[in-house]
Length: 116
Image (cartoon, rainbow, N blue to C red; front, side, top):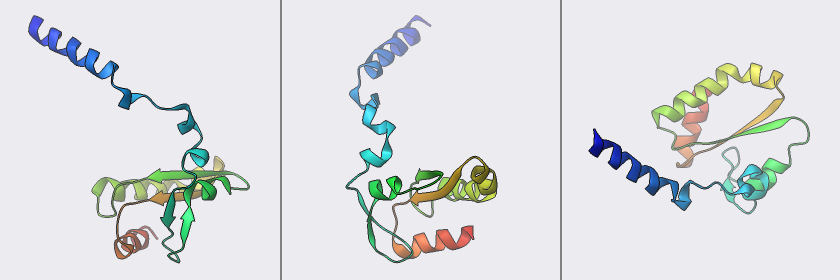
């Protein structure tokens, strides 16, 4: 028991000093933090600035989902949950949802078509 406790304390000390776990204050405003991040929009292939797209929400809120890849089981489930609860989210003031995924165009299109 003492050895396990000592190991856990050492791990806690290691992780508590790790700078990777520190979230910068700028992350509190993703429109500012993501400004200059260019991504291809699925609908037309146009390159958009993610920060500008987030800040262009005129009324309501935008939900930004940073996903994995289109064939990831958890990503598919997350997308399905957004679809099912979309009307409730709109009632709470979310009027736009943006999903960022790491995948080729055909895979992302398949993901989008499965959610319609």
